[in-house]
Length: 129
Image (cartoon, rainbow, N blue to C red; front, side, top):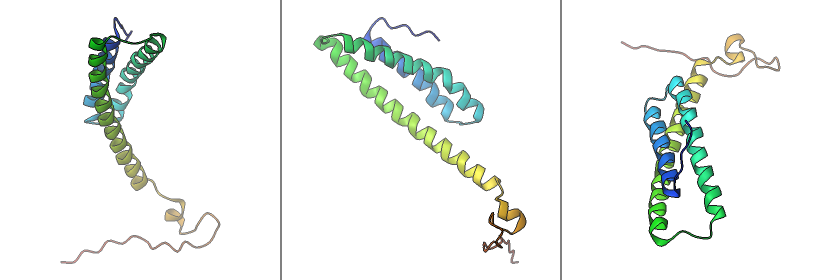
């Protein structure tokens, strides 16, 4: 995905299009979906990097383009907040799942890593009927 940036506003719009794709993929955050987000995130970063260099080289924008750019930037910040929340939720879910599925060493043997008998209570399941 080679970014095209005819203007500052279009640069932000292109970043938003890529972030929108990422947001849609993160609604079902499988490992494959997360991997598929990488090129879109790179493209969004490239667009923002281009914009930052462009704005750093200019004195100022005229009022019309400045207003459109500010509006697009506000929307980009909102989009990024949503993607950040989705990423954090996916991370928390998969991190918690990994902790649930992984056995600790003392769970297997009843001994702590230093050789002492583990004082952790063994999980039990009681059914009452």
